[in-house]
Image (tube, rainbow, N blue to C red; front, side):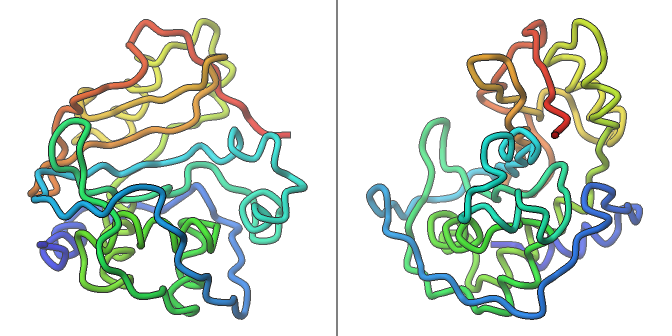
Amino acid sequence: MRLRALAVAALALPALAHAEVPQCRLPPQVSAPALPTPDGPRRVLPIAGYTLALSWSPEYCRTRARDPGSAFQCGGELGRFGFILHGLWPESSPGNWPQWCEARPVPAETVRRNLCMTPSPGLIAHEWAKHGACMARTPEGYFKAGAALLRSLRFPDMIALSRRPGLTAGDLRGALRKATPFLPAAAIRVTANPRGWVEEVHICYGRDFLPMPCANRGAADDAPVKIWRGS
């Protein structure tokens, strides 16, 4: 659990502005969400690597603008979002991962401080309870680790990419790699829905928090994809 070492390593990287949520406005206070009911068995397993899951918010919010449960992310209350942190997931082996380890509730102030990164109190509580408690001692340490990895990345102009004719998953990987040169294309998983709209991008890391090839790269390089720009 070398989360402190991860934070130190991230600070050694060039300082990168997080251009995805420049207009995010934190609320003065939020309520602490309850921990979710587990959706599967508890698994305490050795950690072999990590996945940083980034959700493309315009696609997620496409049908949720009036959903009260998605108000922070999709209702404009905090701002408009591009990529948001879905979660940082410890991995054990391909198709197997630790989950639902013993967790305490996330303090309300910790939730509030992380809303510009993960703009959903419920998702913050879920990610800590299902994934974070298996790799970090505290919610604060878990979210600092995700923030450190996120700060090490730059993002391409997704609006310009969305207008590119014949866009493929390989084009998106190439654009992400060009924006963050230390990121190998093999470490980028692109996920799209059955209609080809990009939903998430996952970055795969080893135990040392250095990028490594994903066991499953999601959409093939030649797969056509589309990027929803938002309404």
